[in-house]
Image (tube, rainbow, N blue to C red; front, side, top):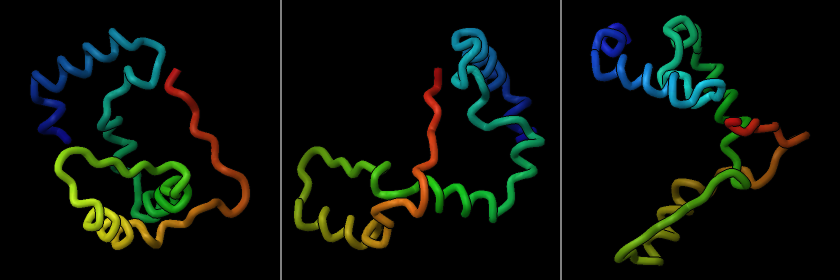
Length: 97
């Protein structure tokens, strides 16, 4: 993270977005403040994924010379165990503006 903070291109990119998107979440660094990143634990990530990574919020898209049967097989293999619904209320995802 210190390496990124010391890279002029990354610093300029962050300042550009902070100016162009003032007052919106898009103005924030995609990496986030160092203190926030250091405080995230494995349990926090697992809880977030368990709460938000559900079938109603997922899209599987393919383009080009795709073998449909292979795509279906791979999607079932990798996403077949994703829960289709939520237990309790669906958590809100606030818009970026």
